[in-house]
Length: 222
Image (tube, rainbow, N blue to C red; front, side, top):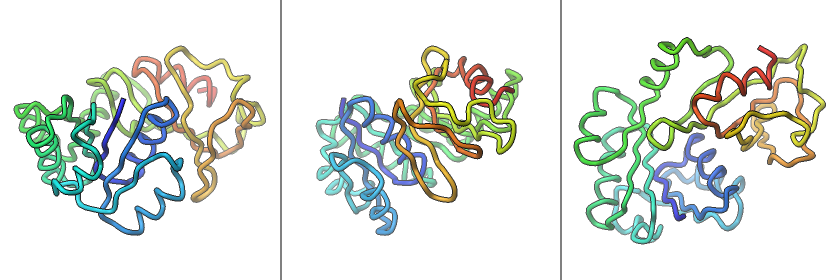
């Protein structure tokens, strides 16, 4: 599968890494030069990183949007996300467009235009309604119409039940994959079977939404 992402923030970077690790091809369009440099340094070499504006058809063409299976707009600006997704759908006939929506009131606009809208506010509200603990677990982005999510779980600095253990030795729930580990201020650790967890690590995981609480119990004991 080929995925084009507009916006290169943390959400986009984690999403790109997840898709690349799963064997998919990914291109990211980002207009901030310093973010482009970070993405080039952090992501595998086969990821295509383009310095440009995803609302411009020239940069979408450079990214190969015309052959993309999915276009994801993940910037912090709803207007930009709407324009980028519409451009991908109309000019490049992308079969599926997904947008991060920062203001839940805008969701209906995206949905009317055939764009799958993902609102972090809506996700959090649903978690509260379902009595899910939000404390140390934070949903970054939901996928597949809310069935899958990329979540962030912080390991405790004391009484850590999994610290010192290898990833391969963890009894993870079904439909849960650890994607990356953020260690300290800015170190991103690639997840491998022999990677050992440390106190205070922030775990980025790809999981079925209904498995989130179980995943947290495995990693934090809570």
